Image (tube, rainbow, N blue to C red):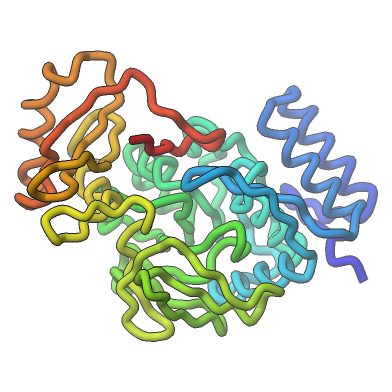
Length: 356
């Protein structure tokens, strides 16, 4: 039996050809908006075909990869989400992520597999501006920037309209985590990848269950290789083991703290410094897009460098930036060099590509 023959969209149960018509209607109702086309293509593919789903990675940590995920793995991942968050048929879910990438695709897959009532809005701009104020969603997934903007716009609406929000697509800043302590909506930071068919571990960012460590979902377990990078064992998927480039503090085979990417680590004076951790501290402090990397230094081997997206020359903003970061970074984390670049390279999903 084909799992992808029934779906509820905007409260209407659709079957077979009616699903394709609904997908086309979304495109027409939104006046051919660019974001609706990948959604229409995805729904059509799921309904009309039975082979693996073609996906590609964002290219943030290397060249984009083109992968094929089996229908069995899509269903297994959706069921893992349902079990982990106690989702049921009829629960209202918001799709506000682009369907070009795995996170958006899996929101649609979950609607098919679990029976969620799916509502789709433009992933660009303000999430709240695209919603009716009376709508309440049991489940949604966002990137940190979307949630940060929503909280700044109207925290009470976030609480009134969302029960559970998953955050993925990168590290969450300490500033956002601090803001979330005053929000009653349950917010979870997820760990996963395209290869693991989205999340395989979560940590709650607020409420009484707030945690700094990720906990495995389902029967997933973890180990480490000799680099200190995470190995994930996923018995629910066709590929049972995934060797990552994520350096972690492994607490046991079900829990870890994420430290950063092996590719990005800065070895400075015998210390391992993870740029992602620095960026989590400075995200709410420095008003310019930025990232941390390293440059060769005779005594330390490598030293911390901060790269800022700004049209002004570096020397004009050095003191301003140092004044802002000195209270949140330790003496060893402070940048010894600050460089301004007019434009950062970004992936098609908007993530900054680090360059030396």
